[in-house]
Image (cartoon, rainbow, N blue to C red; front, top):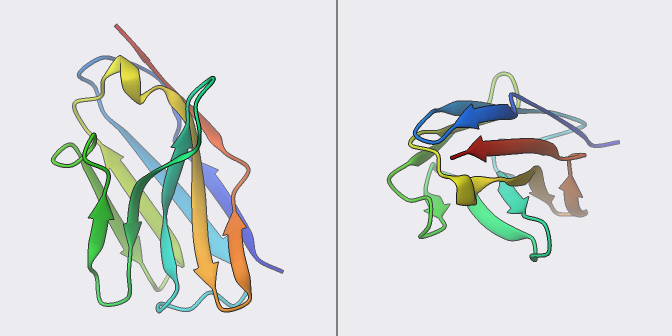
Length: 115
């Protein structure tokens, strides 16, 4: 059973920072792609960033240079450091892991950036 538990969300002023964490359990391998997506009210879920085997990362254009994705394989945890936050970053953020048997999602965590 794969479980993803997110933490670190909350309310922050524009220009501030937050760090999201996603702790994974259930036969997670360092070769599994892990990342973050987000969904704002009335919008579709979109990729924020994901980390592939070997450390290569893929970022959405809207967050590149402001957000940094990292992973601690010993803890099966992925982190999203979010700096210079903007009101348009307000959304529910979801952790995701892709495995051979499927794609799994966390429950989502709210990030709200006030102007």
